[in-house]
Image 1 (cartoon, rainbow, N blue to C red):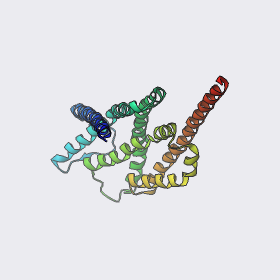
Image 2 (tube, helix red, strand yellow; image 1 turned 60 degrees about the horizontal axis):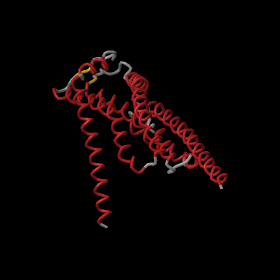
Image 3 (cartoon, rainbow, N blue to C red; image 1 turned 90 degrees about the vertical axis):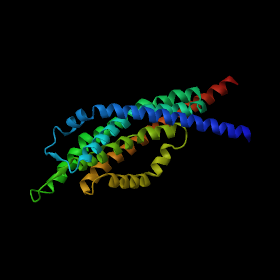
Image 4 (cartoon, rainbow, N blue to C red; image 1 turned 45 degrees about the vertical axis):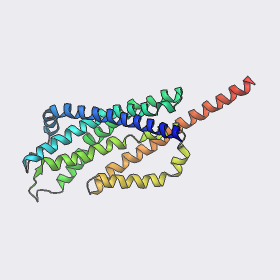
Length: 248
C-alpha cells in the first residue's frame, strides 16, 4: 500500500510539473503577444468594411487580452502536446514513443488550419450574410468588443475541432477505437457535430450549414485515417505471428 501511495504521489508530482511548465510557457507567449498586440490588431481590422467603435475605456483592453490569448494558446499547443507526451512516455514502448511523438507537429498544423478556416472562410461569409440582413433598413453600429467576440467564437473552436483526425488516429493506434465502431456510431457522431456547430455559430441557418459540412468531412476523413492505422496494425501483428511460426 505504501509503495502504491508513493507511486501515485510521484505521478501527481510529475503531472504538476508538466502543467506548471505549460502554464509558464503560455504566460511567456501571452506577454510577448501583448507587446505586439497593437500591430496584430491593425492587421486584423485594416480590411474591415466598417469602423469599429468603443463603448468604454476597458473595451480595448479586453480586446487586446483576447487577441494575445489566442496567439498564446496557438503558440503553446505544441509545447502542451510535448509535455503530455513526456508525462506518458515512461508507460510507452520505444515503438509507441516514436509513433506518438509524430502526432505533435500534426496537432499544431491542424490547429492552425482550423483557425485559418474560421478566419479566412467562415468569418467573411457569415459576416457578409449578417450585414446583408440589415439591407439599409437599420443604422449599423459595430463595437470593437462585439466584433472580436464574434471573431473569437468563429476561429478558436475550429482550432480544437480540427484536431479530430489526430485524436481518432491516436485512439485507434492504442486500440481504444477502430474504424468499424466509428462507422457504426456515425449517426450519433453526426448528431453531436450538428449540436456543436449550432452552439459555436451565430443563430442563423447559413452559419450552421457552413460549419456542419466541414465537420462532417473531418469525421469522414478521420474514419479513413483510422482504417489506415487499423490495417497497418493488423498487418504488423500478422507479420509478427508469421515470424514466430517460422522460428519454431
